[in-house]
Amino acid sequence: DAKTTQPNSMESNEEEPVHLPCNHSTISGTDYIHWYRQLPSQGPEYVIHGLTSNVNNRMASLAIAEDRKSSTLILHRATLRDAAVYYCILRDVKETSGSRLTFGEGTQLTVNP
Amino acid sequence: EAGVTQFPSHSVIEKGQTVTLRCDPISGHDNLYWYRRVMGKEIKFLLHFVKESKQDESGMPNNRFLAERTGGTYSTLKVQPAELEDSGVYFCASSVLRASGGYTFGSGTRLTVV
Image: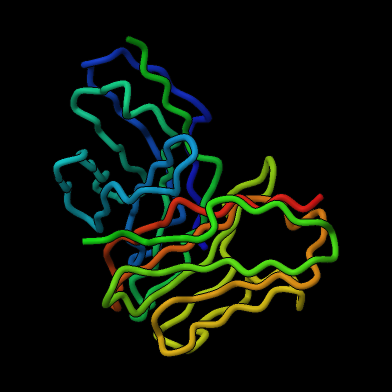
């Protein structure tokens, strides 16, 4: 599995934007970039995914570098409920019937009121 | 739609006993996965079902762990006999049968072996 690198922790203030970086310099052409987050005492929660183009959904935006070696998860206005561990994960699209997720340590996001 | 349901939410058993965890995926999700996080470690993949078939069980730690998904609906994960190092949180996830897209996880079962 291709490896991702994320900062261990980040802090933000409530109602400010948050940019969570992820490096994946060994990404292959068939890897999707997925983001999940895990709130305390809950299972991981899917946030967003993309292949090459930037993506937006109701939870966040995903900005993917042109060379695909890095990406940034953007929370446009952080709330206290966004405090969680955020995981950047690569998934190989060649696995047509689904494939495992390889979790790293993720980024612990703290949101200050 | 109902989410992924795991039962029980907590289980405390003695070393050597047997425990069975259950996962009910989202209806229509052919992919079902088991993961676990042991204390202080990262979330690790255990195995993957496609319908009732085991697609990938390379993450199962040893033969004390047995997963089943009869009929391709709910799945069980049995640990027999349980050891202290099996303590952790066991997560189940499901997804539709396609390459991309996200998985939906359950809230997990916290297993404590004493």
